Amino acid sequence: DAGVTQSPTHLIKTRGQQVTLRCSPKSGHDTVSWYQQALGQGPQFIFQYYEEEERQRGNFPDRFSGHQFPNYSSELNVNALLLGDSALYLCASSPRTAEQYFGPGTRLTVT
Amino acid sequence: AQSVTQPDIHITVSEGASLELRCNYSYGATPYLFWYVQSPGQGLQLLLKYFSGDTLVQGIKGFEAEFKRSQSSFNLRKPSVHWSDAAEYFCAVGAMNTGFQKLVFGTGTRLLVSP
Image (cartoon, rainbow over all chains, first blue to last red):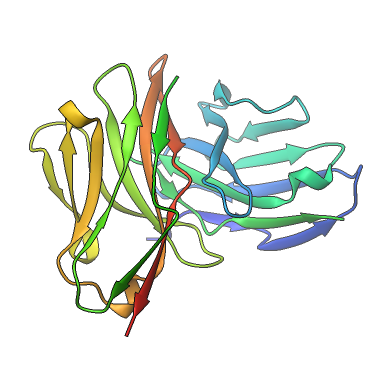
Protein backbone atom coordinates (compact mmCIF):
# COMPACT_ATOMS: atom_id res chain seq x y z
CA ASP A 1 0.00 0.00 0.00
CA ALA A 2 1.62 3.22 -1.17
CA GLY A 3 1.76 6.03 1.33
CA VAL A 4 1.45 9.71 0.58
CA THR A 5 3.48 10.70 -2.47
CA GLN A 6 4.62 14.15 -3.53
CA SER A 7 6.23 15.56 -6.64
CA PRO A 8 8.64 16.94 -7.48
CA THR A 9 11.21 16.16 -4.77
CA HIS A 10 13.16 19.37 -5.28
CA LEU A 11 12.81 22.43 -7.43
CA ILE A 12 14.45 25.78 -7.84
CA LYS A 13 12.50 28.86 -8.93
CA THR A 14 13.23 32.55 -9.39
CA ARG A 15 11.50 35.36 -7.52
CA GLY A 16 8.24 36.33 -9.17
CA GLN A 17 7.68 32.96 -10.80
CA GLN A 18 4.82 30.56 -10.12
CA VAL A 19 5.09 26.97 -8.89
CA THR A 20 2.77 23.95 -8.64
CA LEU A 21 3.36 21.10 -6.22
CA ARG A 22 1.49 17.82 -6.36
CA CYS A 23 0.29 15.29 -3.79
CA SER A 24 -1.35 11.87 -3.98
CA PRO A 25 -2.96 10.77 -0.71
CA LYS A 26 -2.72 7.42 0.97
CA SER A 27 -5.26 4.90 -0.28
CA GLY A 28 -8.61 5.34 1.48
CA HIS A 29 -7.91 8.92 2.58
CA ASP A 30 -10.16 11.70 1.32
CA THR A 31 -8.76 14.75 3.12
CA VAL A 32 -5.54 16.47 2.11
CA SER A 33 -3.70 19.14 4.11
CA TRP A 34 -0.68 21.21 3.14
CA TYR A 35 2.01 22.52 5.48
CA GLN A 36 5.04 24.77 5.03
CA GLN A 37 8.17 23.98 7.04
CA ALA A 38 10.85 26.65 7.03
CA LEU A 39 14.37 25.65 7.97
CA GLY A 40 14.66 24.94 11.69
CA GLN A 41 10.93 25.41 12.31
CA GLY A 42 7.90 23.24 12.86
CA PRO A 43 5.40 22.81 10.03
CA GLN A 44 2.82 25.59 9.57
CA PHE A 45 -0.68 24.79 8.30
CA ILE A 46 -1.51 26.29 4.91
CA PHE A 47 -4.91 24.81 4.02
CA GLN A 48 -6.99 21.66 3.88
CA TYR A 49 -9.18 20.13 1.18
CA TYR A 50 -12.12 17.75 1.39
CA GLU A 51 -14.62 16.94 -1.35
CA GLU A 52 -12.75 19.28 -3.68
CA GLU A 53 -13.36 22.31 -1.46
CA GLU A 54 -11.02 24.27 0.80
CA ARG A 55 -12.26 23.60 4.34
CA GLN A 56 -9.73 25.39 6.52
CA ARG A 57 -7.02 27.91 5.82
CA GLY A 58 -4.05 29.05 7.86
CA ASN A 59 -2.46 32.48 7.96
CA PHE A 60 -1.07 32.49 4.42
CA PRO A 61 -1.64 35.11 1.70
CA ASP A 62 -3.83 34.58 -1.34
CA ARG A 63 -0.70 33.87 -3.38
CA PHE A 64 -1.08 30.37 -1.97
CA SER A 65 -3.93 28.46 -3.57
CA GLY A 66 -4.87 24.85 -4.01
CA HIS A 67 -7.07 22.34 -5.67
CA GLN A 68 -8.35 18.85 -4.99
CA PHE A 69 -9.34 16.49 -7.77
CA PRO A 70 -12.09 13.84 -7.78
CA ASN A 71 -9.49 11.12 -7.11
CA TYR A 72 -8.54 13.06 -3.90
CA SER A 73 -5.12 14.11 -5.19
CA SER A 74 -4.22 17.74 -4.65
CA GLU A 75 -2.11 20.61 -5.93
CA LEU A 76 -0.57 23.56 -4.14
CA ASN A 77 0.07 26.66 -6.25
CA VAL A 78 2.19 29.60 -5.20
CA ASN A 79 2.23 32.76 -7.33
CA ALA A 80 4.69 35.66 -7.34
CA LEU A 81 7.31 33.70 -5.41
CA LEU A 82 9.30 35.47 -2.71
CA LEU A 83 12.63 34.46 -1.22
CA GLY A 84 10.75 33.74 2.02
CA ASP A 85 8.72 31.03 0.30
CA SER A 86 11.80 28.80 0.30
CA ALA A 87 10.83 25.85 2.48
CA LEU A 88 9.90 22.19 2.64
CA TYR A 89 6.27 21.79 1.60
CA LEU A 90 4.56 18.83 3.20
CA CYS A 91 1.34 17.17 2.16
CA ALA A 92 -0.64 15.10 4.64
CA SER A 93 -3.66 12.90 4.10
CA SER A 94 -6.25 11.49 6.47
CA PRO A 95 -9.77 10.17 6.65
CA ARG A 96 -11.37 13.41 7.94
CA THR A 97 -10.61 13.86 11.64
CA ALA A 98 -8.25 10.94 12.12
CA GLU A 99 -4.48 11.19 12.31
CA GLN A 100 -2.62 12.70 9.37
CA TYR A 101 0.04 10.86 7.40
CA PHE A 102 2.73 12.89 5.74
CA GLY A 103 4.53 12.59 2.46
CA PRO A 104 8.29 13.08 2.01
CA GLY A 105 7.85 16.73 1.05
CA THR A 106 8.94 18.99 -1.79
CA ARG A 107 11.97 21.21 -1.16
CA LEU A 108 11.40 24.58 -2.85
CA THR A 109 14.28 26.99 -3.24
CA VAL A 110 13.55 30.52 -4.47
CA THR A 111 16.53 32.49 -5.77
CA ALA B 1 -5.50 30.20 20.00
CA GLN B 2 -3.93 26.79 20.02
CA SER B 3 -0.21 26.47 20.64
CA VAL B 4 2.44 23.89 21.45
CA THR B 5 5.66 24.51 23.34
CA GLN B 6 8.68 22.26 23.19
CA PRO B 7 11.09 23.87 25.63
CA ASP B 8 14.17 21.89 24.65
CA ILE B 9 15.71 22.80 21.29
CA HIS B 10 18.44 20.15 21.55
CA ILE B 11 18.88 17.13 23.79
CA THR B 12 21.86 14.77 23.87
CA VAL B 13 21.40 11.30 25.31
CA SER B 14 23.86 8.42 25.58
CA GLU B 15 22.94 5.29 23.70
CA GLY B 16 21.07 2.94 26.03
CA ALA B 17 19.98 5.73 28.36
CA SER B 18 16.37 6.74 28.90
CA LEU B 19 14.77 9.69 27.12
CA GLU B 20 12.04 12.17 27.92
CA LEU B 21 11.04 14.96 25.52
CA ARG B 22 8.77 17.65 26.91
CA CYS B 23 5.65 19.05 25.29
CA ASN B 24 3.13 21.54 26.67
CA TYR B 25 0.02 22.57 24.80
CA SER B 26 -2.65 25.23 24.95
CA TYR B 27 -6.10 24.27 23.67
CA GLY B 28 -9.57 25.16 24.88
CA ALA B 29 -11.21 21.76 24.47
CA THR B 30 -10.18 18.14 24.88
CA PRO B 31 -7.06 17.88 22.77
CA TYR B 32 -6.01 15.42 20.15
CA LEU B 33 -2.25 15.08 20.65
CA PHE B 34 0.46 13.65 18.44
CA TRP B 35 4.19 13.02 18.32
CA TYR B 36 5.95 12.90 14.96
CA VAL B 37 9.59 12.17 14.09
CA GLN B 38 11.50 13.64 11.17
CA SER B 39 14.86 12.43 9.87
CA PRO B 40 17.00 14.94 7.96
CA GLY B 41 15.44 15.92 4.64
CA GLN B 42 12.48 13.62 5.18
CA GLY B 43 8.77 13.93 5.88
CA LEU B 44 7.11 13.34 9.22
CA GLN B 45 6.41 9.89 10.62
CA LEU B 46 3.66 9.43 13.20
CA LEU B 47 5.02 7.91 16.43
CA LEU B 48 1.85 7.91 18.51
CA LYS B 49 -1.41 9.70 19.16
CA TYR B 50 -3.80 10.47 22.00
CA PHE B 51 -7.49 10.91 21.26
CA SER B 52 -9.17 9.79 24.49
CA GLY B 53 -9.15 7.03 27.10
CA ASP B 54 -5.98 5.69 28.68
CA THR B 55 -3.61 8.59 29.32
CA LEU B 56 -0.51 6.45 28.69
CA VAL B 57 -0.26 5.66 25.00
CA GLN B 58 2.12 3.32 23.27
CA GLY B 59 3.62 4.03 19.89
CA ILE B 60 6.01 2.60 17.37
CA LYS B 61 9.74 2.04 17.91
CA GLY B 62 9.29 1.56 21.67
CA PHE B 63 8.07 5.10 22.37
CA GLU B 64 5.30 6.02 24.80
CA ALA B 65 3.71 9.28 25.92
CA GLU B 66 1.64 10.32 28.88
CA PHE B 67 -1.20 12.85 28.70
CA LYS B 68 -1.50 14.95 31.86
CA ARG B 69 -4.47 17.30 31.62
CA SER B 70 -3.64 19.11 34.88
CA GLN B 71 -0.22 20.05 33.52
CA SER B 72 -1.28 20.50 29.86
CA SER B 73 1.56 18.17 28.97
CA PHE B 74 2.17 15.25 26.64
CA ASN B 75 5.75 14.14 27.21
CA LEU B 76 7.41 11.51 25.05
CA ARG B 77 9.50 8.78 26.65
CA LYS B 78 11.67 5.84 25.69
CA PRO B 79 13.42 3.58 28.21
CA SER B 80 16.52 2.87 26.11
CA VAL B 81 17.63 5.05 23.21
CA HIS B 82 19.24 3.60 20.09
CA TRP B 83 21.59 5.50 17.77
CA SER B 84 18.93 5.30 15.06
CA ASP B 85 16.60 7.44 17.21
CA ALA B 86 18.66 10.54 16.43
CA ALA B 87 16.22 12.85 14.62
CA GLU B 88 13.92 15.85 15.09
CA TYR B 89 10.82 15.25 17.18
CA PHE B 90 7.65 17.32 16.88
CA CYS B 91 4.69 17.48 19.22
CA ALA B 92 1.38 18.61 17.72
CA VAL B 93 -2.15 19.35 18.84
CA GLY B 94 -5.13 18.70 16.55
CA ALA B 95 -7.29 21.82 16.45
CA MET B 96 -10.86 21.22 15.35
CA ASN B 97 -12.83 23.76 13.31
CA THR B 98 -16.21 23.10 11.65
CA GLY B 99 -15.59 19.37 11.80
CA PHE B 100 -12.11 19.48 10.33
CA GLN B 101 -8.79 19.11 12.10
CA LYS B 102 -5.57 20.96 11.46
CA LEU B 103 -2.30 20.26 13.25
CA VAL B 104 -0.50 22.93 15.24
CA PHE B 105 3.13 21.99 15.78
CA GLY B 106 5.79 22.93 18.25
CA THR B 107 9.20 24.07 17.07
CA GLY B 108 10.70 20.64 17.57
CA THR B 109 13.44 19.02 19.68
CA ARG B 110 16.56 17.71 18.01
CA LEU B 111 17.77 14.49 19.63
CA LEU B 112 21.45 13.66 19.45
CA VAL B 113 22.60 10.21 20.55
CA SER B 114 26.17 9.84 21.80
CA PRO B 115 28.03 6.51 21.78
